Image 1 (spheres, rainbow over the protein chains, first blue to last red):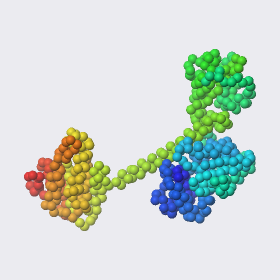
Image 2: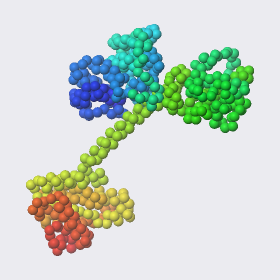
Image 3: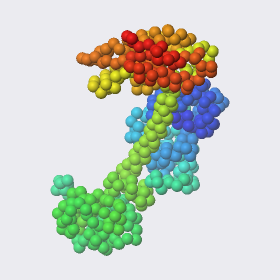
Length: 197
Length: 341
């Protein structure tokens, strides 16, 4: 699994629970090193070992840890770059949902060897969607659920996002938009320099 | 582009439809006056003169050069033009002008080209300022994603640089010869000084080494240094510390050995072996060596710096006495031994 993904998990655990927890996770997962490098590739078994170790040490189910990771990726001040890249997906949350299938392709523009989940969006109506997430990492759909919930907040859209379990050879996520302009959401400028947050 | 190949169609577009398709377009009348523009062009120009003004007064076509009249522009219709608004000198456009049907002027469509990143920043543009088909936002995305990746790589390089410095800092081996380095010698010497066992220090310096480097080159010099290292390791015991402490300077720490006669024998044997010609490619490198020796029991309270200095003094006294010599510290030159003397 790409170092960037492993490093994201590391930063999530470190920023949310502290450096001591991250050290304990590296020992529990028997990584043999204390930090992932973003630009290297690691065996997916190590990624799983880290998630399992974090789940045990924090006393939280694996799915919850993964969903919290998704929320962190969008909302934590330390990872603003990712939130900005996601916001390029569209002007509204619905636009953003329609752009999700392009996400792995967009990521590969910058990192040709990144292995993001394959996403398939089915629009049942203008407000009801099913997203199928296929990934080598079990539970990746829960990360996507966390990202979608946080992005809905970011856009100021009121929505319901639920993980439906395995379906169509992937993890199914149900998304229902209640109101597209629930709040004004967070500001997004196309130009990076214009951001003064 | 050969416009004659396009099928003839007969339709009209209202200003809003035209604006949605081409937010940066300009409509130029047959008299050269600007009749209309797209919404993004309107936003860029704000209160600056635009509609009703002469196209060539508002815009300057930089290339192809000499395009200063509508007739000239019409003659180049369909070709790529580079221009900027005189009121916005920092924002360059790439454009395309096509004649309107019935000789009613021209339609000019513009884009920012590669300058889109600066334009978005300078004019606070949003998604809505670009046509839905425009890849400008994708380009901005790639620029930002690339910057984020570059930042990660820079951070990675800094971490690697730090790790490399730390590793070098901690390294105890001389990379050329595989012998111990100065740092390793200091550590071993400090332990020997603090420990109960007596020990000796031998300071060895090569003679004629510079001549090898100068006449046969650095590759020969490196080869000689590696050969010297082999000799020193072969002529000492496994628990002795053999260190290269300078270009052609070596120090040997010999624990448990303080007998002057034996030390002298060892040094002479080393010198004898180093005097043997060292084959290198088609020639032979000829060097020699001088040695200064001291030992811990010669001091009431042995001290690393003093002992290194005394070994050094003995070495230089050996050098002065003629090369290929051993001098023992505390023993006057008549007691010194020279190879073949």
